[in-house]
Amino acid sequence: MSALTPDEQDMVELVARFVDERVKPRVREFESVDEYPADFIEEMKKLGFFGLLVPAEHGGADVSAACFARVTEELARGWMSLAGAIGGHSVITYLIRTFGTDDQQQRYLPAMAEGRVRATMALTEPSGGSDLQGMSTYAAADGDDLVITGSKTWISNAQHSQLIGLLCKTDRTAQPAHAGMSVVLVEPGDGLAISGKIPKLGYRGVEACELSFDQMRVPASAVLGGVPGQGWRHMMRGLEVGRIQVAARAVGVAQAALEAALRYAQDRETFGKPIWQHQSVGNLLADMATKTRAARLMTLDAAAVLDSGKRADLEAGMAKLFASETAMQVALDAMRVHGGYGFSREYDVERYFRDAPLMILGEGTNEVQRNVIAAQLVARDRNRERI
Image (cartoon, one colour):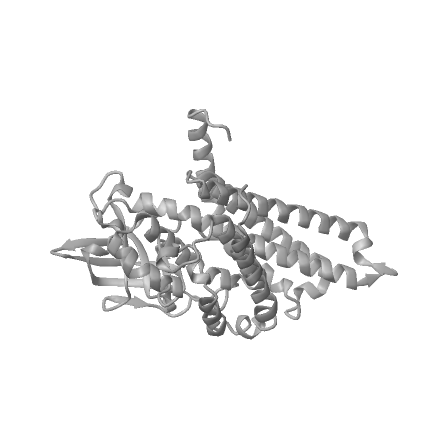
């Protein structure tokens, strides 16, 4: 597991201070009314959080995946929605820096580093869920243009993004279906309708919307990498970053819930002693801390594999699966430690419990994640690779 450089450690500490000094005192202002956190987003732009994965030559911080995971964890420790605000943006950043043409990199990466252009990714469809190969959105060639028709849903940051990494079919006759998919870099405009916010249990403040493409025209040069039919390979690589990011979000939520439970267990007394000294509560705290640490180490392990240049689909999938289930359990146990107060909006553990399920469902549900992990286990075993 690779260690952070001194500059990367400074970045993580900067984010931690931002969370403790700026976010935590104000998060309820935005979360309780589901208000877009414009103030926080502007500060995050100035601090360089949107340029974490942008190469230095394009004005970015160019940090390792391990540092990216730790930054994400710290943001989620303050408010998971802020970690979500850089999630899809960072995946599209990674895709453009890895697979984009020179023109695409010059056009987008400097602006993405500054946050002037924010990006989101559009994969899920209303009737498809995690079945990406069953998608129906397509981009038909028409001269020098592509004409896009279809819809996507649960698209985070849709109303505030200037760039959409759209996974769609550019060859509807290709077999297998994924061989005809491309990632198209779409700038919002005529032919694209963006819905209002989808009401959500948690992950509030940052919007999720439906995108409707009605014969929207974009130049054929908008295909990521310039060559159609590579979208499935591109996006599967990008999802390794996405799943590490979701795992890190989960670790942040779990850490926040653990810290809240620890503080409460020391302050609250029953039967003449702090409740952490009661075995039932002490055991909860011990298990919460152990699972949170394990989730963090799994996430950093997946990040280290990605940093090494190897495929990290197995490790990222395992980290996402374990960390998300851990966040849900730790959030619930934090409520138990708080007793009846854990059910009150006066305490933050109620928010952690509402935010935690997103990581179980997002970036591929955990049920699908288990299928991915099983397939990779078999593939690696056949290649005699140690797991």
